[in-house]
Image 1: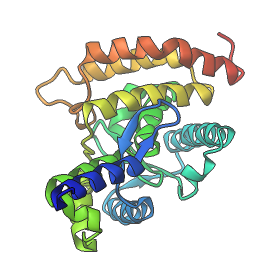
Image 2: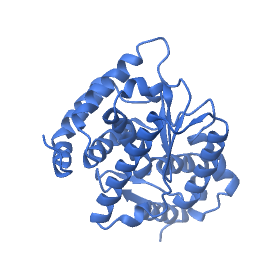
Image 3: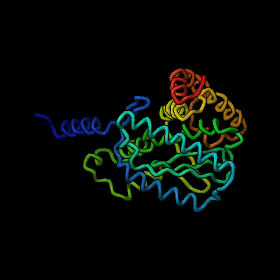
Image 4: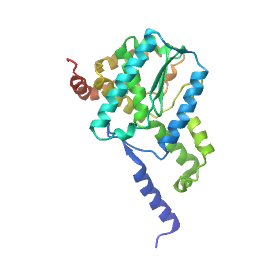
Length: 269
């Protein structure tokens, strides 16, 4: 007869298998235990707070570019998920794309599709295609459920077996969310793991290609980002990202597939 500990372990394994999510674009599996609707609601509240404490720019060429590029990538993602029968994954996304007047070299997308781009990154993006690299990468973090994955990791680390009985309170969940997403007017660093960053690179490369942006421009963009981080203080956007050599090799490995998506979008190679 199994002991209680053995039964609990068996249940935990079964629970983890049920909660395991497969990214339909990259095939990567991840453990996502949290409720996506709850996460999106907390993200919306945090996003609204950030915008209220920031200078949001609208009606300019740059802000319109962010809207246009973001919508093209969003539409490409919607079409892809619909074609594979997983449009339900995006049912709760309410997309917003805002430009914030801030010298930080940064951009991010919160769960539920809440996107912010800082003016400090625009000299590095240079063009709509460069912007597509950034937005494809950040949108991929949201679509891949990286926030849920990080929250799930924190849930397990802090509360262990308590999550099996769903005994985590709303306050505890809110605390975990703020640890993973310390968003504010002056701080906008969403810390992901290196595997998540590399997945966002891959998925973002595909999404920008599906949207009709040349994926071959990804390498020059990341080179400009690397050059921009050569000073004494690394840009927040770049601080948790993979080694440049690793990123370059990874992008090269996925380029052939990305170019297929780019060609399928109607572009001439």
